[in-house]
Length: 122
Image (cartoon, rainbow, N blue to C red; front, side, top):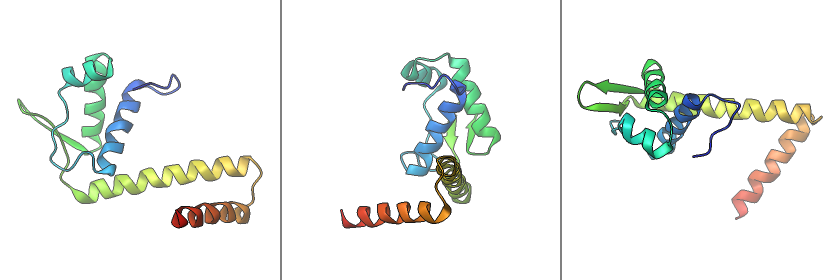
């Protein structure tokens, strides 16, 4: 994984895990890699992985069982809310960027509609 210098690494790791959760790559109850294992895989300090796991636990997206490891929440509503929140952030960022480029709301809708139609044809 290549990291963005403009965002703390632990947040990027959190976002990676969140993306895996909403894509279904990680399901409710799945065990996350151990801190040591994941730190070796991503080539980061184990404390960075631990911080990411702690923040995910604080957000109630994972839970830790002492001596067993860290697991993805089994609460489907929590995962669905995460998915919705991430989609909202993406759309919001997109709209802000498009407005900064000078597009009107109608132009944005037209562009998005064209892309959706194109995707449906393929």
